[in-house]
Each structure stands twice: as structure tokens, then as C-alpha cells.
Image (cartoon, rainbow, N blue to C red; front, side):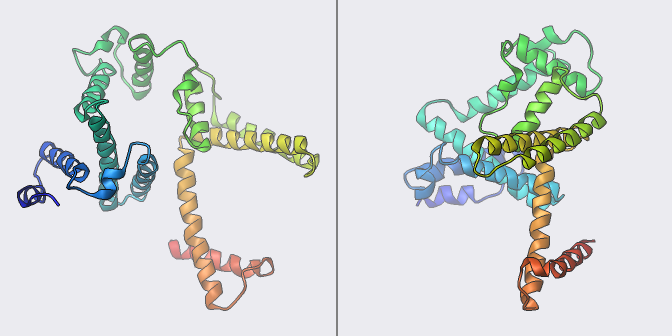
Length: 288
């Protein structure tokens, strides 16, 4: 346990963002010190990866639900994880927490020459920007010509560790930046119909004992999913967020169905699908 004076000082809330962050940084230092928390001391950047991902998803969910109080809590958890991981690297001597913030600020200034006069990206600001699309185009030029990130496939910028749905969405967004995109959402929508027909054809010719035909069906199913993601993207919707909301809705409604079936002592079997469907509709109605 740390000394009482330090503990008392850190338990006091701060009134401005700078002091509040310094408080978080010092709390993290204390948690990782010899007199701190055994669990926190045992963690490494590798062991913290899953926690970081989970906290980001929880923050996104709170934002989606328009729950500002919950968002405040979850964004704090994201900041804790990023600060904790950065401090672990500081303890290893790889870099300091201040280096993370300085490098981020340097990058933001470099990529916003339309805002900062001293920006290193000035050479790529060949004309004034008036909308978000022009800003993003200028951003990419700075990445390629000032930061030296050009010359490789643009899809290489998407991390390998992304979940497949998110990776598909990011691939499509990157390709669209290079002009490889449907002109309208209708074109992407027609592709879904085309891919669905190919899935149906592959399914007709699929033999569960034939690995080649199963692989072909799997490939065509993947194409269908990819096409659906593309269409959703063209509608201006993030498919990863949309699916997360759908999953939450399904959980909420299915839980209601299961609860009602148990209360009425009915089995959840195919033969009772009509009953379950009525409870599903009841759950939908209750949400309105």
C-alpha cells in the first residue's frame, strides 16, 4: 500500500483537463509500482490487448445508445487501457508516455496544413480545402509524399488483426479512395443479387463429403457477405456498428422469448415456433 499523503492527494478530483490527465498518469504509475496492485504489475502490453479491444467496443456501444453517462465511463476505461499500455512501454525504456502524445500532435499538425501555418504538410496543400472529402484526399497525399507511406498496396494499411467484417469494410473504403468503387449504391445492391445466385448454385452442387465443393460454397458465401458489406457502406452505414446493434437487439428479444416460454412452461422447439414468434413480436412492440 502506498503512503497516505500520496493516496489522499490522488483521491482529489481535478478541475481542468491537464491536471485530470496528470492525475490519471500518476494513478497508473502507482498501480504499477512495487507497493501498487499485484494484478496491474503482472500485466504486459500483450496481455492488455483483449482488454483494450473490449473497452473500445463497450465505448462504441455507449455512444450508439446515446448514453452520455455510460459513454463517459467507457471512454475513461479506454483511456486507462491506452495510458496503462503506454506506461508499460515507458517502464521498458522503449518510449515515454509523453512521446505518444507528442508524436500524435506532430502527426495531426502535419496532416492539417489548412489549419496550422507551420505544418510540414504544406507542400501538399496545393489548393484550399472546403469539405471533408478534400481534407481526406489531402491527408492521403501527405501520408504518401511527406511521410513516405506510398509505394505499397493501399490495403496494407489495414491491420491484419482486424475482425473479418471490419477488415472487409476497411478494404472497401481504401479501394474507394483509389476510385475502385461502385458509382451508386444501386450497383452494389445488384452485386448482392448476383452473389446470392452464385451461392444458391454452389449449394445445389455441394456434397458434404466433397471438400472441394464445400470450399467453393464457403468462397461464394464469403463473396455474398463482402457484397452486403459493400452495399451497406455505400448507404453511409458502418456495417460493424450496424451488426453490433443488431446483435444487441437479437439478444434482448430472444431473452424475452426464452423468459416467456419458461414462464408458460413451453419447450423451445421447432414445433413451437409460432408461439415463440408471437413472443418475439411482443418484444418488438414493447420496445416502441
